[in-house]
Image (cartoon, rainbow, N blue to C red; front, top):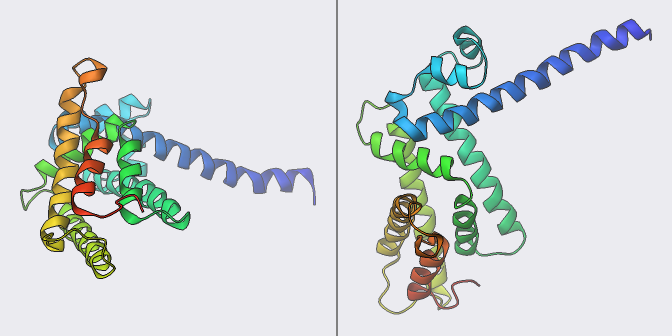
Length: 212
């Protein structure tokens, strides 16, 4: 095989890698933009400018703002689910894996901002992320309820705890703590909300050996 042939075959691979890198750069810029001004306030032209490409260049990767929003949400889920699956594979419980996810989110302010902002915006049925969040909340509550019922069957659920109520409460607590944490970042470090610690404290109220 000639050097020319090798070079010809390598060029598409380099182009593909470069395209993936640019797509990732756009996603990160979109996360920041959506977190700062919400979906409706964000502009594709502004996001394109943040990554140093033209508006048509951005449209090559994401033809509409709704498509970009979908990609941002899918990206967040892919990262979160991969982290949880890794913890589960290492023998941690679902709830300990969730606490560890909350700890990691405390290092990813833009991700928390975009999720909190979009979740509130998307309650409107005509919002492009409405169905995504409706399904996400339904599935999250269902999975947690199933795990709480399983723990109840083996004596790990404290007396009087209703798995359905507790599942909704855990999801609501996680979202509420994110909002309080964002506001607390204006305060001295010692006074900021510790999302993971507060979540652990609630799990200790409803579970026997919550970390197990």
